[in-house]
Image 1 (cartoon, rainbow, N blue to C red):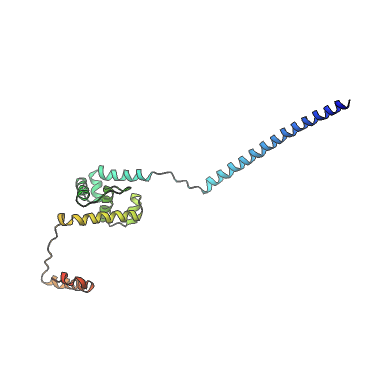
Image 2 (image 1 turned 180 degrees about the vertical axis):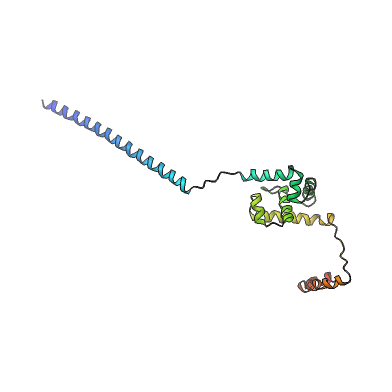
Length: 195
């Protein structure tokens, strides 16, 4: 009899242990599902209130689209934006690339550099405005503007003809003050500036 009582007691303990483990599993499942729901609710709230909802944009693609409209679009668009015809723009690109020594950088093509240069000159725009239009930083626009300007200076002797300035009579009297101010500000170049 004592053996049966011990066996019954052990069976009762194992059943109780199994019930307790099953109850603990249910409690853990409830706790984990509650934590998961709380995390999902907090994540949705954070997403709704704090994350930026701007559509993703491909700035390179938009820039290329704008440049393609200038290079390959209507003649009128090129004239209005750059103040040159498309054929003249392509000729200028070829000359500056070949004789002016203008090279493309890793991120900016020589055509884009020349287009920004002409756009700045044509409309008297600031670097920040051009940077906004072309999706570039002010530093990049400045660097590209200066590189195109250096290339233009290299070809200036061959392609630009300076007209002599012959001012006579009463007009000469008006301009003499500028000549004097130039002499006053640049004393090292005095010999070169005197007529």
